Image (cartoon, rainbow, N blue to C red; front, side):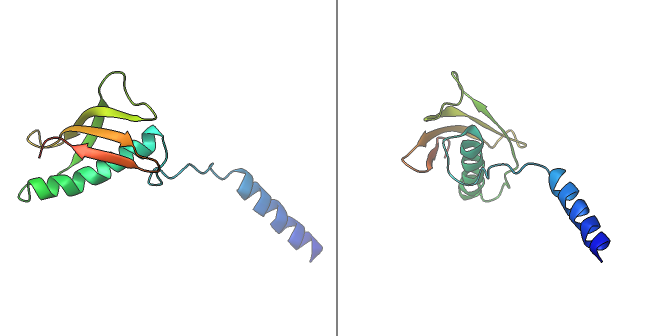
Length: 105
């Protein structure tokens, strides 16, 4: 019995040691680029559906205007799979969350 428990402990420890590290959830507001881009993309889908209900959005990417992302935010362009969709945005850190404006609708 002791050997079985020892073997189980070794297997458990080795499984824990090889587990991938956990990453911060970009959906939780923080002054990071991942969090900002998650908020921008998430809001984009809802805004684009409101603006063009007959054209489903397919978010592709975000390109930040110079100087790029800063912890206070920035401006940039959203690219959609449909070239008729997407557009400019501004993202600003507002105390404890991202405030995003979509400048195309």
